[in-house]
Length: 103
Image (cartoon, rainbow, N blue to C red; front, top):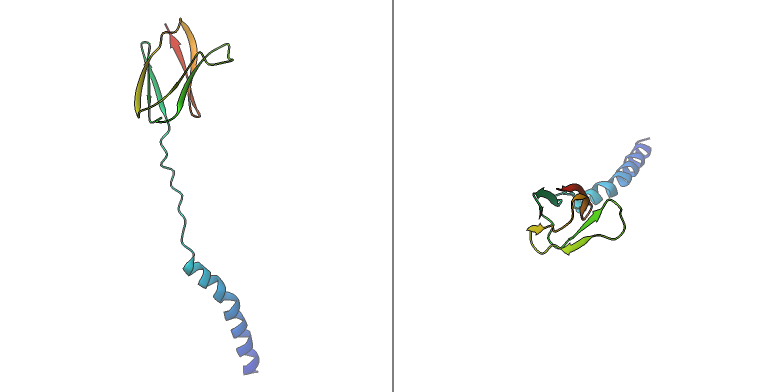
């Protein structure tokens, strides 16, 4: 009887041991979402884009189609003078889009 209990305990130990041994040697992975999203703001006819270094800014009119303006952003804080006719436009940087009004 003691031999039977000893075999059962040994089997339980053998099944549980690989999991605990794997847990000790596997590093924990922590995902950190510290990627800053671009910020688009407008004052008068000047668009300011921050936190978008290396991205492309595209401006579309409401008719859609090809962008009316497209520029590569080469610094963390960039300003662009808009020489566009009056109207409503969409400014897109990366996955961020904003509606602007030129008066």
